[in-house]
Length: 113
Length: 112
Image 1 (cartoon, rainbow over the protein chains, first blue to last red):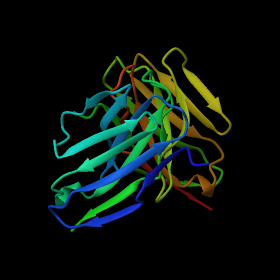
Image 2 (cartoon, helix red, strand yellow):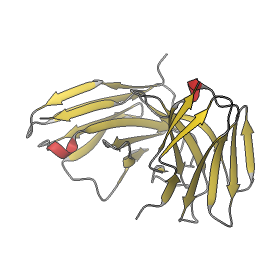
Image 3 (cartoon, each protein chain N blue to C red):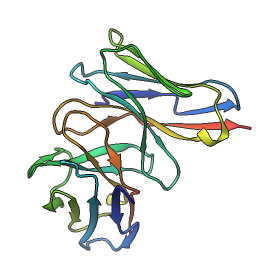
Image 4 (cartoon, one colour):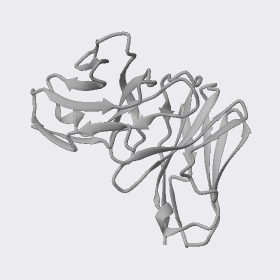
């Protein structure tokens, strides 16, 4: 069984469109994250979400908004997509905020044309 | 400001050799130091992790060495195998919701 799953795996879209990426974890974890991996493979935290508390990395444009319908799901919605948004987006989860192991999903490769 | 610096950017090691990747951090509030392994098209997977109360941790062929005073830690892969060829990331974390701060990664190639 997949611990952290994401859909879709690939997403190709035009500039200016709005898109969403879905993430689900079946580990019973309390905390979920979104990371962005750029073309140079640099991984950077975008959001952390724990018990309905959202921590936003200040460098993330407000076109990006995470939405959590329940503890097992954290979706990422992106408005007005730009060329620079092209990257691989990873969802992750951990049992708590205490710097414990984070389990990553398989990633969603977003290409903005 | 890059809080976790990783080197080298790429590394080629012969099969059976020792692969060594180094990282340095700046924020003394970090208290959790994991290493992740990533294969092409896959998500990062935890390899081994250490907390600053110990100087070394070994799991199979993988060892983390940690130097708190120097704010440095390293990954040693003993008896490196072609299947170890991947990108390795060091990271640092602390209690709270900031997530992990990653190094820029090391592309490791093990030549048969």
